[in-house]
Figure 1 (cartoon, rainbow, N blue to C red):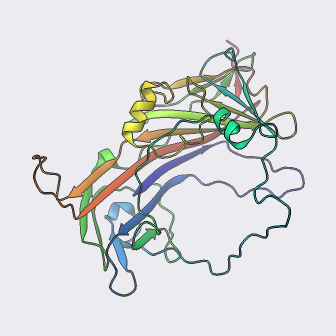
Figure 2: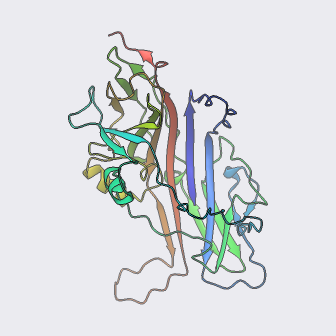
Figure 3: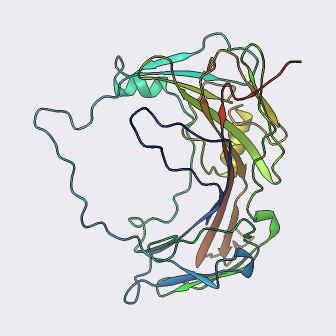
Length: 334
């Protein structure tokens, strides 16, 4: 189970000239259910997830294999042209909370001048270990929700609390309970973003209950064609692309020690003056939640005892927010 609480604050991204407006992003609560099994189903794979009334989506949700796209065609390859053209343009990478840009920044990655390996070294992002979850190619049988048969939006007041029961023709019965501690995380709430005369943006947010760490990353199109500006809240050089998603708690703890992720007691960060220079930047923020991990039967205390778990369960959680930085921020006249 992967659950998210998403918040959008003043996010109205203008379209590029000559292009239609992009679809409005949606906030709220999101949930993805995935079931994988090594068992061969008896007939057509069928499974359901019976849910508590607090989830407000009915009595049960169908877990359906992904539909096969039989109409997809292989991309056309023009003779004499490389299958993957080298990306063009430059990326300017900044990092760290503070009033001013630190010495040695930005690191500039010019894709037109670097080969793939050199660009990967320059466009540095933390390596994180994520457990391999259910996937169609990884398991003999696989079902998911939402799917082509059922894809309701979760109500704002939806809760995971209560008894859950998963059953089907390729899985053992899985019964478990989720308590308040592992319910949806609270939404991220920013206080009004303020901007100093020098151009520094001050971010303040309310503590998210049960969050175990925070991370922020912002991006803007540069003043020059083909130029992108990236900033992250990490104390070390970090592009951030791998960190704006679910992370195992042990990885969050490690990244806090390495000063890449902000600890849960921190509730503010300054985007240095001189990074975006008045350009409208999209800021993405994530609060990581701890996981609920269950196995049946539970692991015995005696490490030498025979243990053959019938099923395992993981509930991973995050709370995200997206907002804009730019001239619309409230000037700080103090």
